[in-house]
Image (cartoon, rainbow, N blue to C red):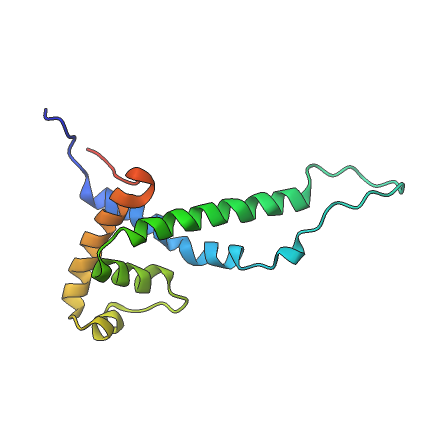
Length: 137
């Protein structure tokens, strides 16, 4: 056994895909107007007890989404431009691009785009939150 453990590249890619798939949802969550978040109103009228504070829950969800979105962007920014472009168009752009469309845009064939995506997913897994997505055998 060496100093470094063996990386399970297939599972690592799956972990990266699962994380990047959330980007569009996170973008929708953080894009919400902060006006929707209201402070609780205190009245002397009787009310059935509610569990928790909805405004606080919404604020926490918004902040968590912003933190996760920032971590994804940070991971993507550490990649080479071509790899970042392929992952961005695949997972982050508002429109879902096919490998053919990405290839036409950046001047590569679909097969080359597929290879770049595989490599980029592993690189993203290494850079996202200091390697949190890397799976070992």
